Image 1 (cartoon, helix red, strand yellow):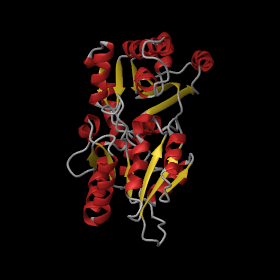
Image 2 (image 1 turned 45 degrees about the vertical axis):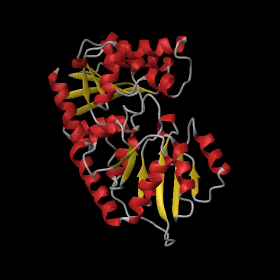
Image 3 (image 1 turned 60 degrees about the vertical axis):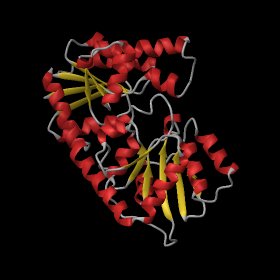
Length: 347
């Protein structure tokens, strides 16, 4: 089987890396033809494709691919699988509030979401909750969609030796883009509750809510928070290896019920216990004891969950092991690649 992975995407981004390498690990010949995101690059990609003369059995349009789907359908009558992964309208308008819900940008993003899916033969999303959102929001048929967990780069995020300092501190890590759905401010508030409990909170990344999260930590005069900017893959995986607990999403936004997030899978791949929100997408994936699920936007619940894991090493070890086993059985690149091959074979 020969698959063309096509579009304006970053092949090193977690979602793309997982699916590309998942296919390769299952013996699929994957040809990549891509440019970085941008309208001008779509034009360049058109000529790249025409000049390439590539032969393939099916095309996968990688994330982020709403704009590239229109070009893909123009270029080929071969089966197209579109990895929508997320919604432009939900992400930029409902979640990040980049423009008015009634404005032209909102209408444009809704158009891209709806018609990119309509042009594809099959659309991939990360949870059934997300599929339900697309079906209801855009009037699409549920038969067009397939669920593929996000997974993680298990060559970067793998079991590693911790480099703990001998200071007796319990280390909690948050990393991400500071999108509102991640709820970083609630993590800072939990740090305030635990400021005298020998718990250190490490924040890694940058993004929309990053400045206000740092400002809140300063206002609260916290001494148990450490802020890093964006780290490269090896630095981030080492920070995660040095942590006792990894945190997921806690923001109360319209997308909160739909997403699990990359960092959750990456922590599971490294056998770290995860605390995240008790939302439909997380309930889809996790079984009993594989993670600690708590209410959204609730720093007290988060602080209590952290203390519970800190004070109960046996429970912490059990959650870490069960979560890791769940990743290996359901969300590793090899497993997800096998599922994607079955989807391709449907076409």
